[in-house]
Amino acid sequence: MTGRHATTVDVGRPPTGPGALRGWDGRVAAFTLAALLLLVALMGSVNLLLDGVLRDGGLRWAYAATMVLLFLLGAQLVVRGRAGRAQTLAMVLLGDLTYLVIVLCIEEPLRYATPLMLLFPALAAACLLDVRPLCVHLAVTTAVCFAALAPSYDSNAGLVVQAGMSAGMLNAAAIGVFVLRRRVERLLVATEDLSRLDPLTGLYDRRYLVEQAPRLWRQTRREGSHLSAVVLDLDHFKRLNDQFGHAAGDSVLGAVARALSAAVRPTDVLARTGGEELVALGSVADLTEARKLAERLRAAVATAGDRRPWVTASVGLALARPVDGEEPAAALWRLIDRADAAMYEAKRTGRDRVVVAADIPRARPPRPEEPTPAQPHG
Image 1 (cartoon, rainbow, N blue to C red):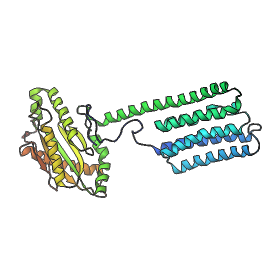
Image 2 (cartoon, one colour):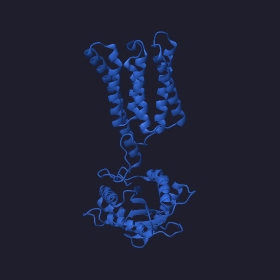
Image 3 (cartoon, rainbow, N blue to C red):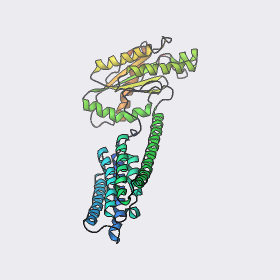
Image 4 (tube, helix red, strand yellow):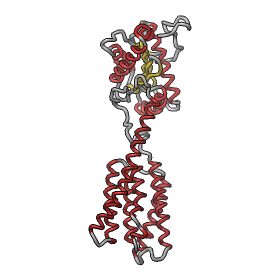
């Protein structure tokens, strides 16, 4: 999972397309379907109390059994509290078929069971299903409309017109809500990305590192590996800004971001934590692998642009083996602080090099350019 620049592909990043903002929400699907099933069962049960609505004999019992089934399925969804994608599609199609059962059990379908009843499963499908399951629902809705209205029309032309209009209106409503839902999801994804991306470089920011801390800690502990933190700080960046202007400095930061995004592994997290300082986090087997990664990132900065041979970075490296009982965010920042201290040591000993942090955290030394607090750093 890399940092993302506006002009590059975010290799290895989890999908953030429509419907993937927070993954499949089984709880929402379960309670939405439960509410619809219970509502249809409650409304449909009223017909059992009215005379002349239902056909006599076995069809009346079939109707009652269908209402009981809807009640039981709705209650089961409430108790379980989750619904998978396949179960959601099954419940939506059950709603379509329930309408067909109701039509067959009612004396006057056009009066007591209009195709408008299919609006319930249509809206559920539009709000909960992906493209392919939605297409299955649209086809089933069309077939159910023709099957339900066929006994009420002697003329095939009349059946085609009425069933076609009913199915067309229901499917149009479902497609319209689905398109609107996709649009809203895209806007939410874009908003969420903007809230955790650095606007200048397109890399992730400090907030995203905090969000990813639990995942990184769990993954590294599960693999039995180490978590490495690589802190990079561009050398003499203030001098570059003073000599060439802030526009040139921004251009350099953008070039460095692109170079680092191409150099990190797909599973690494790359972020800009402020100023000219960047952090790369990733799982490694040992110190040797971590050092190779840090050296690759240092070299990537040095070759960020053919016209910028003066761009180098001081790099600090620290490793940690996550253990149970740690608070991931706090432990992650302790690891980054150790790498940050090593980065300052790299600056003190000549810049454009990688320094590995000691096992015991130590106080951060001052930058070489900062003999007094009044002098700005670079």
